[in-house]
Length: 88
Image 1 (tube, rainbow, N blue to C red):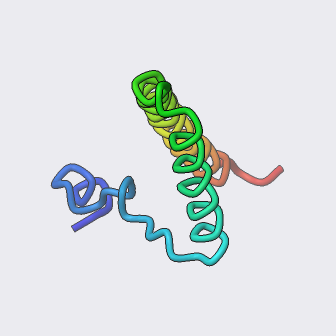
Image 2: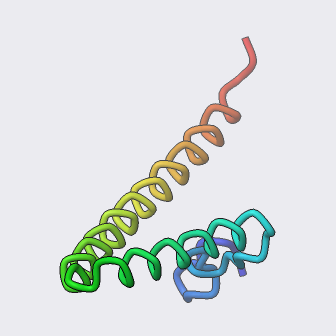
């Protein structure tokens, strides 16, 4: 089976397969969750607004990630096309 068939059949799906196991990721995630908890303890009245903020931010990141994937795929395809050109 070729890569295009794998993608069509849903067997090749890079989104969501990345494991966040690096120490750097864990450290930053811990800092984020700690800061969030401290913020909501200090200002419990902002929880609803904070949830809206987080939701909008997640949506923007998702859109950005999708566009970056598409752009990367296009660049890769353009590189392959360039490789097929005869050498001058």
